[in-house]
Length: 229
Ligand code: ADE
Image 1: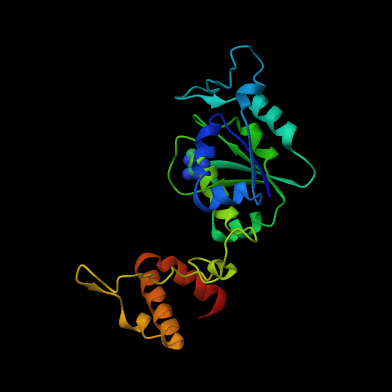
Image 2: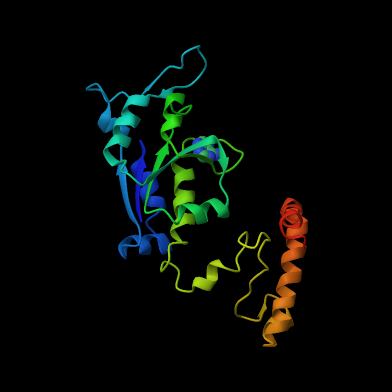
């Protein structure tokens, strides 16, 4: 997958996506990540990329033109463009699965108070990573690219790892344990050490349901709505 990120702070996205599984996906060629800085497309020598908002108000707004020029250089037929903004559609695992099917993705990171509204129609999708305001779209783009990369076939060793996990089945995942079986007086639940796979599956389903009821009752409601179970 080819991903271009339009950002004033390429190093912050690059650093967030250089380690561990995503870093490996990049070095193995599953993900090709490139950056474009709107500053390089500014219309003046000073590299102006923002200005005061019309109508007054605090903060600065990113100019449309440098973002548009950056986008123009990478947008191809078949590219899918995502604008990161707290006003966007909430990012979910379902959307990650949809984005993972694309061959070319472009992410536009707003900064300051956001981008000029006239950039919005150039995006195929406006995405928010949560109901809070970040200093810019960069951490949000890193989150989305991370979630999408691990879904690219071949990136995770076990394809199964993405099947049973939290959200794919619309429940939170059951807790995990590893050695030692007794750690500072706390034992691993005995069912997990018994080797009876049917019992382990039952235990995991029960725990997943308990956790989801406790922390995300909204997911249970949605599940009832969809599957009736
Ligand atoms: N930019 C600032 N806050 C954001 C958020 N919550 N999601 C996506 N982009 C953002």
